[in-house]
Amino acid sequence: MTNPTALDLSAITAKKWADPADFPAEEFERATAFYESMRTHDDHLLKVRDEASGLVEQWTGRVPRDVGSFGTRLNLQTSDLDLGIGFPVEQREELMRALVGEGRATFLGERNTSFSTTRLVFSFDIAGIEIDVSALTVEDFAVACRMLDQIDAEMTREERIAHTWVKHLLREGGRLQEYAQWKLVTYARYCPEFNWVPIPEKTGS
Image (cartoon, rainbow, N blue to C red):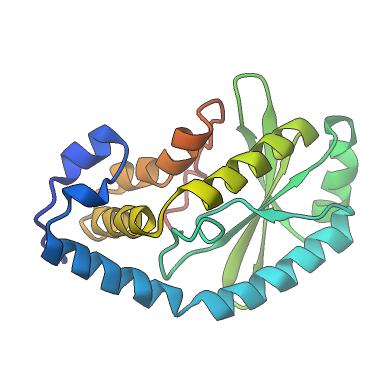
C-alpha cells in the first residue's frame, strides 16, 4: 500500500462509519493534513460547479444541487461533480431531447434510487472535469435535499476528515470494491431508503 496505516480498514468498512475517536493521534494528524490539501481545490471546483449548474438550469429549467462528494466536502482531488435535479417522470422524454438530442450531454443510463423509483443519469465535461447530472423524481429530489441539509448540519469536520482519509486509503490500496461502497456510506447513514448505486465504470470522486 502506498500509504501504510495503523487503522483496521476492514473493521471500519464493516462498521460503515469512521469514528475519529478510533484514530491514533498521529494518524488523525495525517488525515487532517490530507483533508486540508483537498480543500485547496475548492475554489476551482466551485467555479466549475457554478458554470455547470448554470448550464443545467438553462437546459432543463430546473435549479440543480450538488449531490456528490464535493457538496458534502468528502471529495478527493480527482473528484468529478455530481448535480441532481428534480424532474417529472412524465416529462423524461423531453429531458432526453433537451440534453442528448441537442448534443449537450451523454446519457449514462437509468439507475435505481429507491425501491420504487429511478433516476436518469447524464454526463458532460467542463475544463476536464466530468459533470454527472441525475434527474430524480421531484419527490426524491426533495428527500435528497433534506438529507444533504442534515449531513451539512450534523456531520462534524472531524468526521469528514476521518471519512475522507479512509476513502483515500482504500483507493490508494487498490481496494476498489470497498472504495466504491465507502463512497455511499454517508448517504446510507442519513438516508437509508435511497440506493445511490455508483456508475460502474467510474472510480473517482
